[in-house]
Length: 233
Image 1 (cartoon, rainbow, N blue to C red):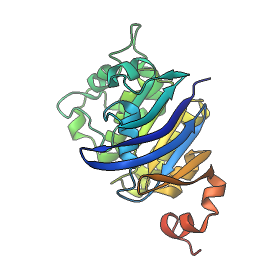
Image 2 (image 1 turned 30 degrees about the vertical axis):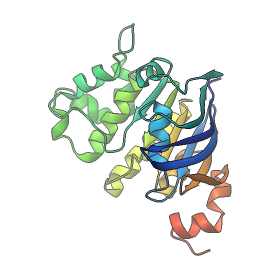
Image 3 (image 1 turned 90 degrees about the horizontal axis):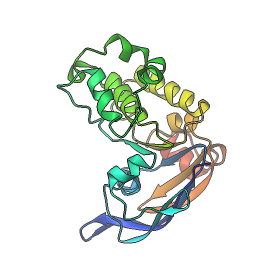
């Protein structure tokens, strides 16, 4: 069983501290982190992925302290990031974007795993990624991460900027990944979508975890209802 533990994590940008002692655990399940803009959600994922060096605390993966590991070494260890804004390579084809996602693999690449999850990518495998819709680019970004055969997928705001229909399609794909027993750590402002995917969650506020529990428990909390689900407390 894979397990990620974040212990007392402190990180930020120069003198600006964005995370203040964050603690969380991800095991073989789908976990979400919800919070407002500026809560530190993206900073947390980037720190777990190795793109930001923390100034305090630890990141532990399968019992190993990986706090000082490079981002590439973390990918090779099974942690893949789907970044905010998708970050596909617009001038390359869909298929070539997927090939780049599997660069750490030493065996043949499994396109069918991705194409079965996102059939539209199979139909457009020769099309340049920059000509896809925003939702299709998000599917490609997720598929690219899956090409490394990760044991944990970090997803940063996958519904951001997407039309409702595309949000529903991406959410359904993440539910299917969960059912395929691919562990997920999902950062979202869209708590309604996140709670359809995840089994457990954390509420991040100003760089600190202020609430944790099952997604049902989070959805029942007055703070979450008012701020993230659009329902009265």
